[in-house]
Amino acid sequence: KSRTNESLREAKRLLENCFRVTMIGQAVDEDGLRKRQVALYIVNNQFRVFFGLKSLQLCRNLVNQVQSRSFPDMDTFTLSERVTYSYFLGRLLIFQDSLAEAREALQFALTNCHPSNPRNIRRIYEYLVPINLFVGRRPAQGALTHFGIDYLDKIITATRMGNVRALEAAIQERGDEYIARGLFLSLDRLKLVAYRNLFRNVVAVFQRTTTETKKERVLLDTFVGPFRSFGEEDPLAFLQDADAPPPAPPSDEEVLEQIKCILSNLIHKRCIKGYISHERNILVLSPKEPFPALDTVSL
Figure 1 (cartoon, rainbow, N blue to C red):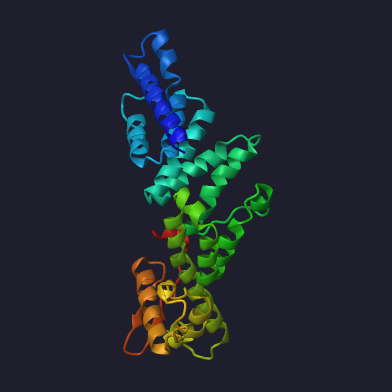
Figure 2: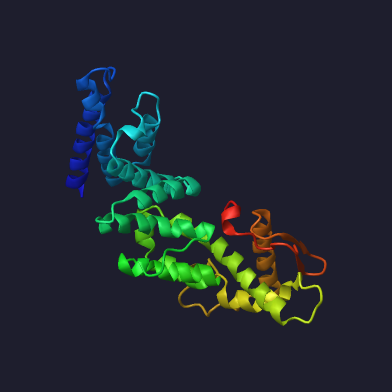
C-alpha cells in the first residue's frame, strides 16, 4: 500500500507540472491552443490520482481551477472528456452532500456516455441510482441486471416499500464499500425517504378501509404496528453486553414518541403536508397532496 501511495504522489507531481504547462500564457497561437486542448484530459487523470489518495481537498481545488475564468470553455473539449469530468465531479459532490448537483453531473455523464462502454455506464449507475431515490426515480426495468448491479435492488425495494429495517440491512451488507465510495451517509439519509413512504403506505390503507368521514385525520396509534415491524431497530443495541438478556421492547408510548419525532422532521422538510395534534395524538393531513412528490421537496 505504501508503494502504491508513493506512486500516486509521484503521478500527482507530474500531472500538476503538466497542468501548469498547459495553462501558461494566452491561447492565441496554434501551440497555445494545442496545449489547452489537453487540459481537461489532465484534470481527469488528476481526479483519478486524487481519489486514489483520498484527498477531497485536492479534488475541490481542481474543480475551482476548472471553474475559473482562465480555464478553457468546456465546449472546446471532446464529449468523452466532459463525460469523464462530470462523473468525477458527481462523485465529489456526493462526498460534499450536494446531492442535487451530483445528480445533475452524473445524469449528464450517463446520458452522454457511449453505449459501447458498459463498464463506464455501470460505474455511473452505481452512484446515480441511490441518489435518484431522493427524487423518487428508479432505473429502467432490467437495467440493474444488465449492468451487474442487482445488489442495489434491495435498497430500491426497501426504500419504495417503506421498510426502514430492510434498508438498514441492505446498507450494512456492503457498508465498507459504501464508505469507501462516499455513499454511506447519503444512503443513510434515505431512511427519511423510506419513513415517508412507510407513513404514506399506512395512510393509504387507512383511508381505503376506514369508515370515518374525515379521512385526513389519522390516529397516531395507527402507525405503531407498522413502525414496530418496519421501523429502524434500536441504533444503540450494539452497545448491549453479549451476555446480558435482550432488552425489553419499547412501550407503545415510547414508540409514539419516536413516530412524533420522525413525523415532525418530515413535516418540517415538507415531505408531508399537515400537522400533529399532540393533545389528541392525531396526524392531520392536508386534503390536497399530503405526500408531495419527492422531486418537489428538498431533502
